[in-house]
Image (tube, rainbow, N blue to C red; front, side, top):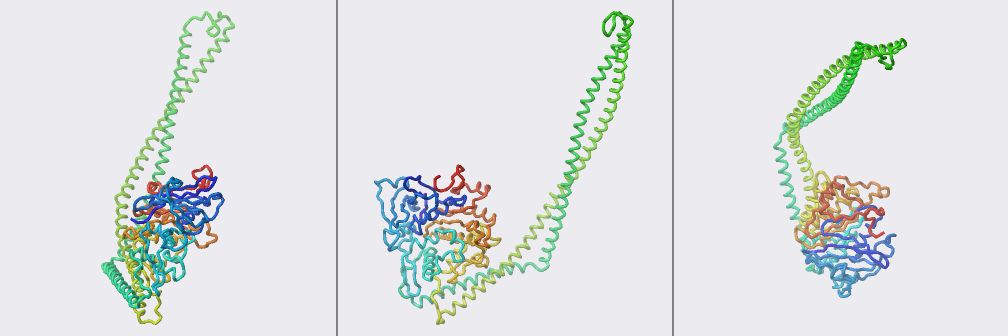
Length: 621
């Protein structure tokens, strides 16, 4: 198994605390606020591995001048640590983990970042050896047949992608507009896809070889035309099995479906109205029950008052039958003036009698009101029962009739939609066959043309590009890039890029271009893993999801990535081939629900940008 993965990056210096970030094989996401060091880490990783410019100074990096990167070779799981001082060309290597790097008993090796690429002590030879690509030759000139050693620098263009490159309209497989660089890029892709390099190329390419290459490409195009022709015919035959009457039937089904849906909506609306009425009746019923409870308490109070008044009146009758020797009011001996007290007694008894009459009247009125409330309660219960029966009928109608009807109608309508998709697919295949036929005609004219250019001959077999497209298409489909994704390859030398559903990749907006660029690289990783061809098995991306999103005032027309693409992207990105690694630096992160689903398979670092709230940034505060 080829390649390696990055275990950690460590930035140190004198009198400062080491800034460290750990990675794992598989999916890694470093996310959070802007200006927290994410782009600095990206640049430091590239520079520490021997390629690119030193990371730009930022306020937090003051005092830091040493980069240490710990990598693990997949072949035997051996750790290696590379040390590079910012501003220097030399890299020092030790076969050990980062924690043991400063152990003087472990020998080091000095690696160069300049000079001959095939030098054993060059960083390119060292890392390409991990990937099984050491001593591979890339073609520099098809005309002269000259070659040069494959380099880690060229491979880095398919491995480390900065934010300003990921949105470019040029091919993900080209890293320069220069002809020589494009030839080398094509030959490198040829090595990755086929496993074969250009070591056997002679200095001057024989015209017969070029003719054979053209003939081989024509033969493959003819195969593709036949293949797509057969596919088109199958679609046509399938569509012909459905008569115009059937298509009209499907249209009628759509109308019936809409009517049923509208009727179902009305039933649901009626149901909601009935539920509201039921709730009002229920509230009224609760109120009346509470009134009855209060009336019952009041009734007990009236009865108690009546019993007390009856007792007083009975006592008066009994006391009147006894001879009075003392005043019943003040207990003084009876004298003439005590008549006043006797009058007070009579008045009191009269008041008690009147109060008793009033209490009995109130009791009678209370009884009548309670009976009325009880009757109203029974009426409410009856009305609620009627509503419940009506609601059950509506529920049954929705469940047993309309739900089934609507499902059946939708199933039938989907058959028609499938026919519509077939029609669109036929148009797409027609366009594809036309383009292939034009390319075939062009190639057939080349052997007789005096103006034949070496740019007419691509280095990568078209069959390999078609196979690569399937892996790219799979990723884009998983990410819900479009409703239907069909990926083809435009092998025209100056374009050499994928087409998505018949549309050039570069014609999309910046947001979708960054997503499709990412799919091309991960698709390449998937291809190499499936076909067991050598690759770095490492991809590092800076801002593939929010590239320049915060700078839309400067880049008018930049489109935002749809939420569903983001969710699908994060859900799928954790599904990487074994022994591979992807590291993404981005401001975007999964939503809470998605994160909960993937957290066990995602190495996540969040920089809050806020002091004392998690990890503020890469550098210690």
